[in-house]
Image (cartoon, rainbow, N blue to C red; front, side):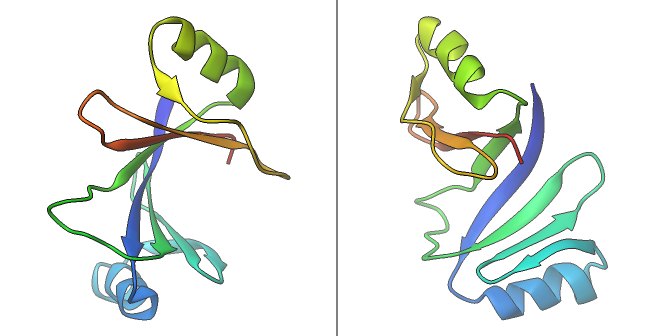
Length: 108
């Protein structure tokens, strides 16, 4: 697996898009309602509409894998905790690390 993106939840997606795109100069890769994704070199920074809680709710680390279900099964056999696989045309599965930080397996 490789780290695919860091997801930042924000109630101010337009301001955040302007900051990461215009101020920091990152290239906008995906521009969908409620979802903006930027090229940040070796990984991506995604903005997701929703409440943020800086300091109490960290960003979500999303790991790319071609086969979310198989990777989920392999990691759960090692003790990882994940919910169900969902989605289409891409697939994802949310979980938490031992400290409760959100992580995700994603085919996108």
